[in-house]
Image 1 (cartoon, helix red, strand yellow):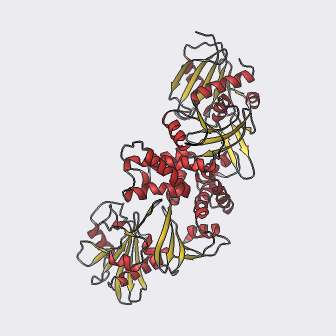
Image 2: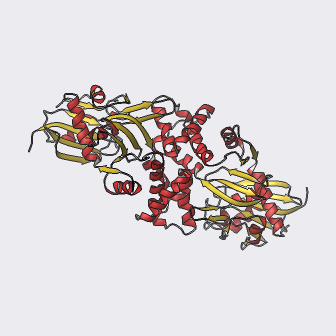
Image 3: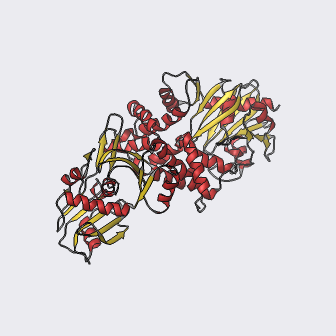
Length: 284
Length: 284
């Protein structure tokens, strides 16, 4: 086994992934648990020690994600965009632990017309193969990021995943029946997005009542409306780099059909980003 | 007291209002309870009898709203738009009750690109003073209706009230603090709607985290985003008739500032609509 020179930890709200990283940035081992920041409060030192287990104790640790939020271990203040590797590396925040362990700051953007925040996604962006990209990071709060020479220049957030879960779990669109994917229903949802989200979502109910949409295709239709809303505001012709895998990657690929795009694995990207930031900070 | 010639009942999901209506259409008495269709199932005959109490037993009863849905007393199939007084009157559905009692059908619209349904709102529209209007009916599922010579020609639904309740009750926008109205926050929400709903809603979180929005003004901001979304798709210059009262009427009036609009009382309109439909059906 290659010599491990960095432990990277992507510590989010609901899950945590730890990477044992060798010289050069290769991930030689991964551990995944559901011990997310929001699962219980505090006691982060013991939780990290348990996560690392028998991994080498003499290498630095770099963490990103909600672990740096006000509900995390130590708050890592946002750095303001534009922000690249050096800006993130300069503002690492050390946590009280028996060995050197740091948190990557989030990134904020404050303009007259808008405010934006990200925490965790900045590290994925740093790890993308694409140095210049319109990066799409699907999720609870999906981010679309303008990346220029591996710097975060501008970004927008869409509450896609959160709204999807809320409307399918409660109220007029909740069906109580197991959902099946349907390319047709997804495509119809994409089209319905043109009348706006609050109108397009109601279409899932009206079409079901009028026999035009099967109950088990509600989630596919809703996914189409919400992803369609992102695409109405983004992806106007530039090449899009989508950081996603599995069904989510397939959904975005279908939605981007005909437009230039690439898919990258977000887990690979976050590990690579942690490595690159650690390198820029002189940690490894 | 004038002689009562019709009992009108607006029987919705969560509340019921009964109107004792005199010759000419004047409402001489109103009863309001929370015995909505969804409160418990079935037993509608006894529930109606309890509601009517000592009101005259020799006059016909006309009901509208969710009482005609698949969870109501008897299902009243949708009539298709365009639909006016005569179309609704021709398709009243009688319920099994000791005296003549009928339900007004809902209205549906099926086009290539869209499906729409309403149930209850058709009766409000029939009762508006405005014979020709772009009618705005705020609510859980807000409706915007093109009304031509008191006929429902076309309509669109926005899940405004439902999304408002969902995002304020759960997830990233739930604050746990009592909400206060703020004209400024509402206006900022209206502006934020221009970037779309799923993006505009996230602004409530980002601005709070960055100190640009007070936690207690979250609901006002969210209201602005959602009503702003309606206005982005509607109200392009025509006179708008808003059927709302209280804070909701004020919110729409503020959002429509500078555009021609009128406010009508939806309770008065639904009673008037029941009367006009009953008249068209020869019930009174």
